[in-house]
Length: 128
Image (cartoon, rainbow, N blue to C red; front, top):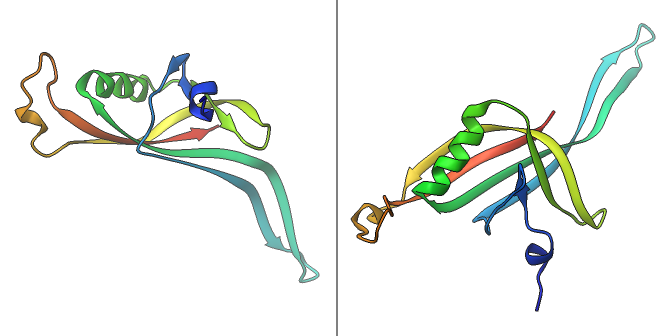
């Protein structure tokens, strides 16, 4: 049985990601409001549908390094993810912000080769 994640894996710069611990997509309306001389409210909508994705992953040190590399590059990332309003892939140019990671408790005791612990990585992907 195929799932949405199997058919439409999330990708950053062409790299398929594994299942996240959390993945929250929000869309924002960019607007400015002010009062006119007549006392009425005026709203100017500059943009609708600006996408922000808040993501959390449980991962190995190797994946932590990959996520951190994308964050440290400071450059635009091409993010492809399933969008039910399409339905299908949405592709956005985004930047990674609010990057953080934590070592999972007791994972530093793992003895398998090259494990170097397990981490929880969190970040926001913000469309620009």
